[in-house]
Figure 1 (tube, rainbow, N blue to C red):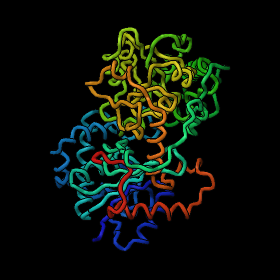
Figure 2 (cartoon, helix red, strand yellow):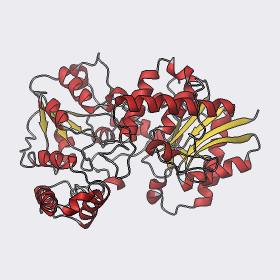
Figure 3 (tube, rainbow, N blue to C red):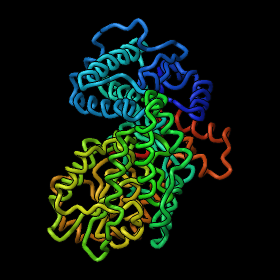
Amino acid sequence: MTIRLLCVSTADNTDKILNALVKECDEIDLRLHFGNDMADFKASSLSRMDTRKGQRGHLMREQYYAGENYELLSSPIFKESMERTVDQLFRYSDGYRYRSHNLKNFQDYLDYFYILSDMLAQQIKEEKITHALFFNVPHLVCDTILYDLCKCLGIKTVILTQSIFPRKYFSMESVEHFGFFNSKKSKAAPLVIDKKQNLNLFYMKDVGQAPGESGKLSYKGLFNILAYVLLKKPSMFFKPFQFLKILKRVRAIYAGFPKWRDPFSSFFHENELAYFEHLIEFEQQQIDIEQRFIYFPLQLQPEMTTSSLGGKFRDQLLAIEALSRILPDDVKIYVKENPKQGTYSRGPLFFHRLNRIPNVVFMPSFANTNTLIAHCEGVATITGTVGWEAIRKGKKAIVFGNTWYSSFPGVFRWSNKLKYSDFEQSKISHKQLEKTSGALVDACHNGVVERHYIKIDDGHDVEKNVVSVVEVLKGLLDGKISAVFNKTK
């Protein structure tokens, strides 16, 4: 049987894997590729609504209404698909990108969703797609709609995503399967876990865990301020007092945080000033580790881990509100902001809503995660790695979204039926945790499919990696290899 493949691959390393897969497998016919300039269609141009083309031009060229998105619009997932797409599109709006799209209101977002879903459905049906391959969990507008369309049309999907274990990646056929893993039949050796060892996550290496010297405006911060003025407010160059007023507020923000916290190193917008000024108010917050508390570190937004894997709990405050309802009066929720977060999803109403929850205590930026885990009664998170950090040390975790460790001992998937007494009284078997962890690592595929994880793959060999991943993809697509995660197992 010929596999008529749709693939979303937006990076050079996964393009090499895709090209090798198609070259080596005569039964695989690549019919649609969304990715960079060399793909059929440039995926990012659909998110940013610009005119950059792929090898087959621009998807919106000579477009017309065909009603091919009917299966999605009439499906039970329609509302969720639309909300998720709007959330992901919003990251490319004026307040969060120097070169942004021009969607201004809710109706604009709806109109674009209907247009884009119809155009993508036309392509899928015209090419008679039978299989779809995603090199990461769909989370960038185009791939999200493609994935939802494929599920509604009964097209087999294969999703890959890298694990935190070196040279290991996960696979699944549905996002909803992420984290569902049965280790009972595994004969793999346990993974030795040192309860005293702190995780050293490469993507958090620049984050401090203690108060220190106050910061100063960085060169990156200054560059982004100038970029903002040049691209968004060029008239400000002729209003020096207004510009100096902004610089004064920026310097005060830097001085209010530890040196490692660089608020404007990646982006600047005037809207962010009030957000960071508000955070500074908590920098003198005293941390009472003798108080009974659940530790809830907020996750970075916008990110795949919330936008795609969080479901309705992409709204993290909804999770905190739900958690507060089941806690005894003497158990607080210690909330800590993500150290890389900007103003996205953090407007004034966010903090007003957070302040309305009586048992919430907001932590300063330097609050030590390891100390909070050590003294908490448990952690709560949407999908964050903090849950894995906690259960390694014998602390239980509540997860609200889909995450890879959600089937592990000590992890409670959120349910409206969850009782805090059940959570509080449960015990974690460290031996069983090591066994389950070993089984999952053993079930993972060998290789690297996410370019950022190459840095933790010592001696990474590009060609060997391509060969290894291609062999797995053949089996996943033709059904001869089972996915790592499967909710029905």
